Length: 102
Image (cartoon, rainbow, N blue to C red):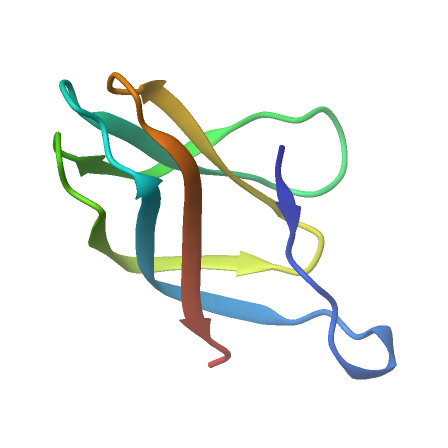
């Protein structure tokens, strides 16, 4: 699953400078880490994912943060968390991405 970067007032394009990803789980893994990659695909044409950054949640941990740095998305771009590893027993994930309009 993915999210679509929203449009602004009167359906205008907007640009968002991504700042931070907060990642949380309701039930942490009993062993092994949860590793998720934040990815972006530009709008239009075939979907092609580009890695923005990776967040790792170690066993028995409930949450972590990742500073994204200088990365910009625009209206209609796609964002997703792609899981490369899920520790034993880990369930119910939540990722919150924050950013600002320049």
